Amino acid sequence: MPLRFARRLGLADAVTVANAAVGFLAVVAATVDVALAARLVLLAAVADGLDGVVARHRGSTPAGPYLDSLADVASFGVAPAALVAAVVRDGRSFAADPVLVAAGVGAGALFVAAAVARLGLYTVDEDGARETVGVPTTLAATVLAAAVIAGYTAPLLLVAATAAFALLMGSTVTYPDLHAQDALVMGVVQAAVILTPAGHMATDALPAWIGEGFAFALLFLSAGYLLLGPRFYWGDGIRAPPGLRR
Image 1: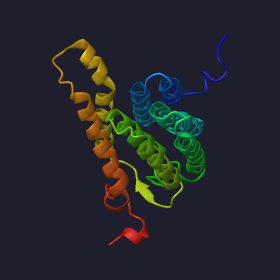
Image 2 (image 1 turned 120 degrees about the vertical axis):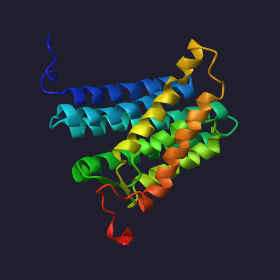
Image 3 (image 1 turned 90 degrees about the horizontal axis):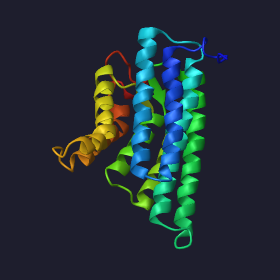
């Protein structure tokens, strides 16, 4: 029996739906292996960039923007929140430190709520624009995932970062879209972080530190855009807000 929506969705939509499925896998993996969960979040980020490329070359459907926001809720809202909650739960027991564990769960819930609100408003107000208001959910999820892989797993640090990202997603700070060449670089580094464990399994020639090295590079790139993008990244035909123009 053919699926009702099979003929109404395009190839880009299929990539978007796969992104949501990867987000679910990341949530499940967080209960077993937080590093694997973090890599799945990054895989979802690669898929999120890929569906835009496919849409530009193969066309999109009217459902595309809505599917994209729904998938992003799973992959860049729920999955990173579950990742942080799992790291906190691994590092602290509720019996020993109930306040911190509760704060980790609460920060995750706030992060999901902020992501849902931000993505809903983006679909209504900003779809097709070359800039976005508030920290992008993909960027927040990438920073959190890269931090976990790079070894920054102190529960208090992750709880504070998650809560800060939840607030920043609702802020009025405006971010320009990544330029095509920079998005490609980010995607390549994300792919390197994802594939490093497979490389280590295939050969002993890869240095042990290379996985964390790529994770540090990704953290550096994403944190640089997070902190400097709103002020210094405008260009390539994207105009800065009036308050930042010289």
